[in-house]
Image (tube, rainbow, N blue to C red; front, side):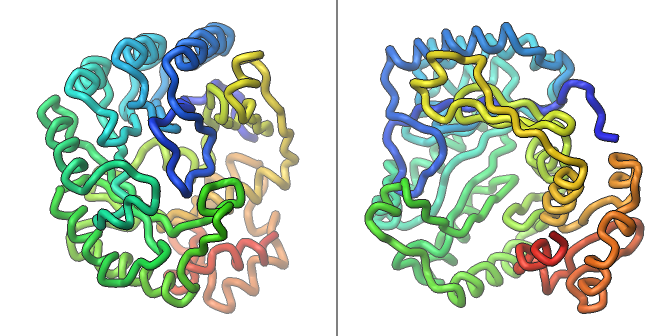
Length: 367
């Protein structure tokens, strides 16, 4: 059955940004010093009342934009987490180039942060402006050089494709530029427009499905030529640089989330913290519990693991639920194997390469 020990993976959400990107639907608000101070007070209260595992394997500080905090606030945040970071193998912080100073980079290094995720997005200045970004490709390179000077070389870049007006040549240029900066990891996401975003309110649309599929195919074919292994639908890394924290999500490990906008999972329970900063400040201990049935958890485990190229361990499924996958999904998985969408080999269940891009349809058949 699912273990009840405290999660070994911690996510911390920083809800502040210097400005709001036009496609972003995460919990965020424009940075104001006083509000950030109030948030830190609330976060301190939450940390004191949560039983955080002192032997964490990973910490991931995301947002929002963690680097939008001023230097004193960033150090306060890092010092709050320091007691739980002693045994962490991967400590990631998301940064934006326009909000990372040399002093902040030094703080990150001093507190043991060893992995950085940067929102590169694309190489074209007009596209960046359309996205609501306030940096250039040159700024990204300078930020990477600054981090490397502080000893932080494990750097991941986020890129986006299927952007309005983006051409295949523009995508190729963005990928070439990103590769020239020598990152260890690349995450490539197709644009998804939510109704509450600036793009959503303007009625903007991503590219057509065929063009988006062509772009994804190019990405999957091009990056391996440069030594990047595709280990998850949207993620590529040089050997030895897969994201340990994100793999915990995809392999259905328990994880703890703290701060507004964060979620977590422990055993057969998911939980969500307040979505708005105002509500979180009123009660930082408030959370909505979402109980999972055994069937819910089984499906979620399959859903997450099939995002990985290696697939899902059938033995791990058996150990987790005391039931085999073939019994739990009898009558549903066989047609998918017969049609070549799923396969079982060497104790793993995986999507075949030709079906990975239609994973949602495969999962629908299993559900």
